[in-house]
Image 1: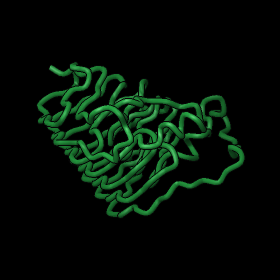
Image 2: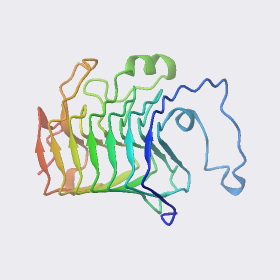
Image 3: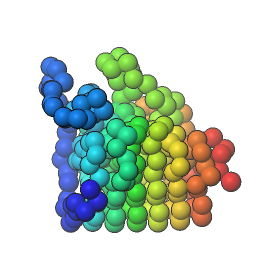
Image 4: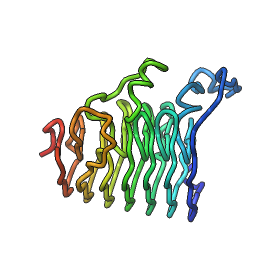
Length: 228
């Protein structure tokens, strides 16, 4: 639960190369019909993987120089609809994390929830390997512009307050429901390695009603022109 606190660590050096032949099996007892470990369980989350009903509090942790084979360069959240409690991040730094898929810093997979307060996201890059991922796994997601340092999938939500995104390839892409972004700075998130045809953006948000009192400045401020 949120009473579990991980505090004061540096998490670095993950390289996410998993030489697996098959998905391992595990007995989840009465939740067997709900919890399914699959490709995202094994290949997502360079520094931290949150799965199922887990919802810890992460404070004063520096995630840097992590990389995965798929998504969630630093963190992957996969609560699989057990999202009564959000995973909490406070006073954390996400720096120079990478992934060929979505969410270079934090990937919030469908059926998950995150709360992010006073965190810094800097120099994180996602979506540099979408052609390979499409060939190997049959997965595509935002191939033109790519995903952000924070990716929120449909069926998920994020509450982000007093946080700064700068020098990432894209800041935030959120196609979830009920997300909130308040008093955040999104500043020139245009770091690139030249692998995506589209220009970088600060926000790609499907439902922008929760975006309030944010400072936004970049090549494309609002990809979907949805923010008031």
